[in-house]
Amino acid sequence: MHTMDRRSDAELVSGARQGDLDAFAVLVGRYRVSALRVAYGIAGSEAEDAVQDAFVKAFRKLEGFRTDAAFRPWLFTIVANESRNRRRSSSRRTKLDLQVRDQPQSAGAAVDDLVAQRDQRRRLLDVVASLPDRYREVVALRYFAGLSESETAAALSCPSGTAKSRLSRALNMLRAQLGEEVTL
Image (cartoon, rainbow, N blue to C red; front, side, top):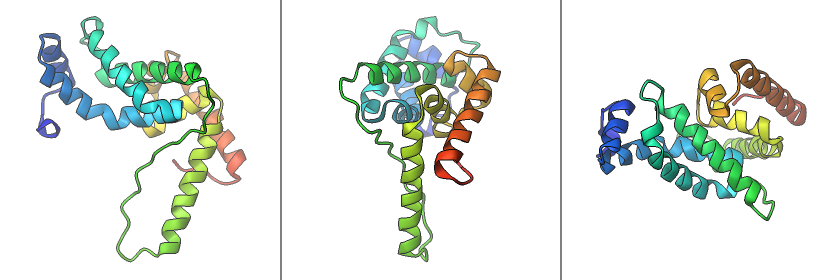
């Protein structure tokens, strides 16, 4: 089973370069959910197509991947680029439909609390979706995919300070629009 595979990303990349498609399938399984979060944050309803294209492109570019680099930020750079391309090429402007998994709730949680939490989450995601591209992308990479500051900067192909300032501005915009403290 792919989820139990304990090989490192570097070992899997090496295997995939040698023609082991199962090794690449493990990488896809390992990063698909996070890649979808990034893509939804950037491209909305085009996310699944963007992720599929990104994995195909990543597979084709494996020979050029620096083995001393981390695979995850490299992959998410491709995902972000494909998501941007999908967003730009989309002839229609659709409201971003960010899919967020519901967090497990205790059995005693009141229905009103669940509805309020879902409404609050939806409101936050709607505001994130309304941010300008550069700010929506940094939020998607940092919080939806859980990249570190340096990984986020690498995925955006910008200096760490630039990524940090974009994130700060994005959070300020979210606070201003929501009128409250933002916790992602």
